[in-house]
Each structure stands twice: as C-alpha cells, then as structure tokens.
Length: 117
Image (tube, rainbow, N blue to C red):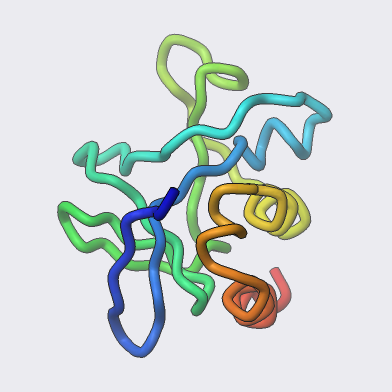
C-alpha cells in the first residue's frame, strides 16, 4: 500500500501513521494511527528532514517541537505532551507501513536530521 506523499523544501513527506511516542515513553503499547493537527484537524505528514507538516494549514516544524495528544494518555481535554527523541525515533522507525513505503534511505535521513533534543 502506498502512503500519500509530497515533496517540499528538498524533503519527501509521507502521511504520518505511528503509535503515540508519549505512550511509548511511558511503557504503553498502543496501535499505530494516522495523526491530525490539533489546531485545524489537517493530516500530518513526516519528512526525511525530521519535520512534520500539516497538509491543511501547512504548519511546518521540527519533530522536537511537537507535542502529542492521544486518547490513551490524555483525558477528556486531549492533553498534548512532549515525547523523548527515543520515543519519536522508535515510533517512526517501527511504523511498518511508513518504513515499507519510504525505504531505509528515507528512514536514515530522518534519523540523521532528528539531531539531539
């Protein structure tokens, strides 16, 4: 299955389907799901430049600056929390559909561009 994708700023972006990295940090095993931007509900894409981008409003930011809200770790108010670099890297690198669609070169570029955070 091919994931929707686009190119921008020299990077290749794919529709983000990962397990919640905050839940991973807390030892919870949750299923992968597609993510939406809380502010506008637009689909989130992840690039090999280690940035997320909202497809609707085009908000673009490095993964280290994002917060994650999911029903597993959030209450009724969908609290958005910071994830560790390990949680984000683990979520992206084990997303079977994402890795299958992108290949190892994409994943290696993503991990290199994560940097330290």
